[in-house]
Length: 126
Image (cartoon, rainbow, N blue to C red; front, top):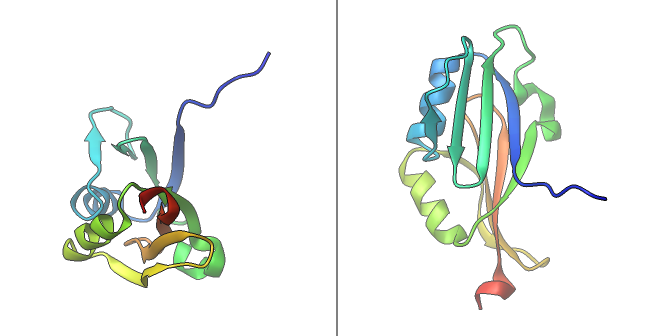
């Protein structure tokens, strides 16, 4: 017997819970769930679930170099997502580009220094 993975939830340490929550809601378009857990925010956008916990003494993700990437998010329209987050003030660290591996993608850095890549399978859309 095997089990099916139904969803994924990323759990991240952040230095300032309010600032990070505001970023995910206002810049990346997340919805905050009304769960009462002191020191935590529970967020989601579509099937992307996130729990951020305030850890003011944690190593800042921006100091982790390449290890500050935590997710590759497969989207239906990378161009639309790029424009949405760019207009909302996201720090774009890799511009929207068609890659030789068949993905249209871009990357950004969150207010905490975590890096995310958003991609669309070009062959699926053409």
